[in-house]
Amino acid sequence: MPNYLQIGGLKVHSSLAKLVEEKICPCTGFSPEYFWVSLGKVVQELGPDLEACLKRRDDIQAKIDNFYCERRQAGAGFMDLQYSDAAKSFLREIGYLEPDQGTVSITTQFVDPEISSIPAPQLVVPSDNARYVLNAVNSRWGSLYDALYGFDVIPETAVQSGAGGGAGFAV
Image 1 (cartoon, helix red, strand yellow):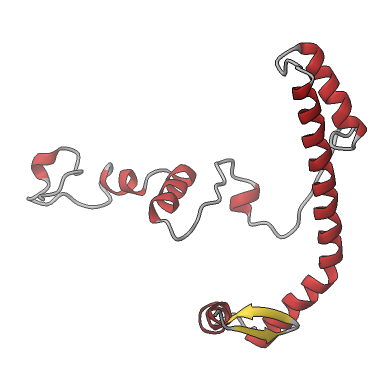
Image 2 (cartoon, one colour):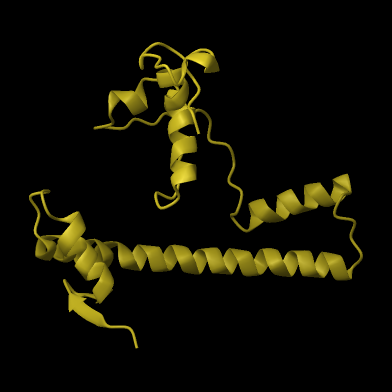
């Protein structure tokens, strides 16, 4: 049976509480208690809006499912152009598609210049998979391997000299 704790008005698994206490909060200037109380306030404040959004999503999904089921039973050809127009009209009718409101401008604050000003891929990857993280880093900044071994950053040694370009190692 999982071990849950009541912290900051939240029901938290003990392993998550331990992670926050031992790994996340140290050296941040915030205590675990402050973290959990703050998170509890956020959940309390945004919870009702989240529930309303999830209910609306479920209602819209049920309408979409019903629409497709009815059309399938009527023998509609989903690849027909007339079906596409009917589907778009239906999606506008239920509020899934909104009319174009024109040009939109969005601004943000407190974004590092590296992210906001330097054009390059921005990838979100699971940090527990080293291969994904390495691929994300390589796509953002180029290959670290190429940067180190493709140039003369690391000097050639006798073991590497026959490999060409400083890129080989004795295995």
